[in-house]
Image (cartoon, one colour):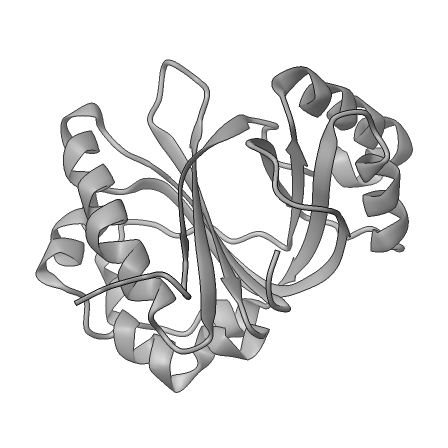
Length: 218
């Protein structure tokens, strides 16, 4: 939980592309990103479902301005050959970034819900504090997406078949799946207007993390 900005990305990967994607992500792409000015860390998660290879990536940024800053746009407009091979193969691609409005709790949970929300809570901290008080919940974050900064046309954006958009991010991190489901039920009780417009509450588990301070891309 570093910085005041975030970038959240979801995508599906076909079975035949899974090995190539995982190697690209962990051996090149995340290192390339976190060595870009303003990027602080990369956290990669995979869904616990057996019927699909779905991934969620959370990039932690110094500020939201990183999203349309010179350094990051230069990366997006000069994709590597490996990225050029992978990007067109990503399905159900969703991408959005902006300001992390509130954080509650300490540390990071191994099991998470990463919900795309179309309506932001009137008092984000009240919701975050209520959820982080649930048994087994390590942290809660709520972010607001900046459409203008996220929607800048780039070479990489043009390589993808699709790119959905969303208004905000609700991230709940827990110690285990049972705690996560209990927190989700609490969220539905205290904020039905928010959760009623959220994406499917899929459970993700940590797959790979990389901090800018230890990244070695060279």
